[in-house]
Each structure stands twice: as C-alpha cells, then as structure tokens.
Length: 349
Image 1: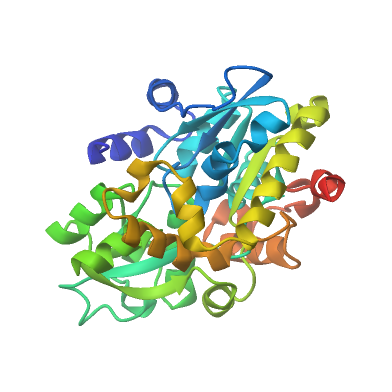
Image 2: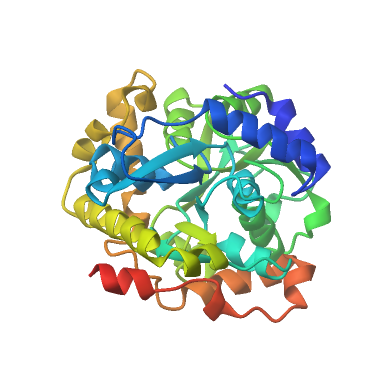
C-alpha cells in the first residue's frame, strides 16, 4: 500500500521537481516486474501508471503471454500509482516508454515536450466516477460537485483532467470543488470509507472492490464506448504506449517490435473471455478474490481496441475535454497529428 501523504507531496512540488523524480526512480527500482525473457534481447524500460489497474492490463498481459520475448525484447515493466508519475519518468529520461493516458501527449506538447502515442489500447476512458455510500443521497450527478472533496489518482493525472471536465460541463467551476490525490486501490477505498473524499474517479479493480464492500455507488460509468459518448461527447482514447518522439524516430525497429507485441495482445484479448484473461495475470492482482477480479476485467473489457488503432475522432474529443478547463491548452494551438502515429500499428497488421 502506498502512503497517501506521498501523493500530496508529489503534487506540491510540481511535475518535474527533483524530489518527485527521485521518489519516482526509487519506487521504480523496487517495482520492476519479472520480464519473463531471461534478460535476453534488447532492454526497454516502460513505466506504467499502475501495473495492477485493469485499464493498463495489456502491459502485463503482453509480458505474461511471452510476446515481448518473441520479438527479441527484454521489457522491464515498472510501476507508479498514477499516470502523471509515469509521464514524469518518461520526460526525465528514466524510461523509454510510458503506459498511460493519451491525453498526456497533448498536455506535454503545450509544455514544449514532443511525445506521441505509438499504439492505442482503448477507445474509452475505462474510468468510473463513484460516490460514497454516505454522500450518495445528495451527490447524484456532476452538477453536485460544488463544495465536494473528490478523489483522483494524482493532481495533474488523467482522472484529475476528466473530473475537471465533468465539473465544467455541468456548470461547476474547477475552483468550487477540491480534488484530493488518493491514488488507487486500498488508499482510494479507505479515503472513501473514512469520509476523506465524498466521491472520486477510479478504475477496476478498485471499482469492483468498492461495490463489493458496499463502500460506494457508481455515479458515472465510462468503461464502454457508449459511456464515453454520453459523458464526453465522443470516443476518448485513453490507455496507450507513448514515447518521446525523438526516441521513436531514432529507434524505429525497437518501437515496431513493441507495437507488434501489443497489437498481438489486443487481438488475443478480443478472442478470449474475462476469466481466461484474468487467469493469465499475476496471482496477487486478484487480492485473494479471483471471481471479483475476473468481474473487474469483464466490466472493463469494452474499453479496449482489438487492433491498437487510434479511434476516429478520438484526438479531437480529448482536445475538447482539455480545452474546457485547462487555460494553457485552451489558448494554445495543439498539433494533434504530432500526438500520435499509426505508422507502427499499420505495419504490425
């Protein structure tokens, strides 16, 4: 379990503060997943914004299926609790790739960083806005966000972005509620149970645990394309592998191998059941409840693409969402064509 105080300190020092980078590096060193390839082949380090989150399941599943090794790669999967910290590790050069939300590529572009998604895992956020059992009677829609404490994985994370958009879309100014960085998993659930937050945005398996413990209810479900359309007005490409553009251009053979492996995994997922997928994952991901974990996988499966291709209109939806509340992006010209590439996915086919 992570210390919630750490999230607050990371947020306070800012995206690229030295202490944040140091904490990220230390955690990464202690969170390396077994590569399963015997240390052979070209080594690539990828930071994941929560290896045990179902929204990022393709990362570990690709490794467990042996597809990285089959491509001649020795992929080291590292883990941080929030996508914004995976982003930090990438731009600081600690890792070659990050598995996180595509929206970070737009955010980084306006900050002068050239980063692009090379394979798109999803066409929906996979996120769920939940409300605590105690607040459920009065917090019935995003219109009720005013004056509330709302949990997000980290400040500046994609859950933070989406929460702010839902607020603004429903007439609540971002200054009228308080985002609280509580991570995911046990720290999120505890914050909900203890009243540290009234509700918040999270993913499976945290959602499944909340419902199982009757600690809260689903307020808004964005695990399906239909849910994304209703809440955000279009497809919302979220989970992806994104990398610094300069690195991509200088290592195209390696990037192609990574994309080959991920596209193969997405195709495998589209032809296997949630139970079969769950069975491939590390035993500790189920936290002692295999049936609940399989249900979490099943609930989230609709968010994934089966081919790794960027969904049509997806980048535009993400830009619209970010421009609604982010003054830096609102007044900037974002070149969407530089935030993703389909070059490698097309070649993988």
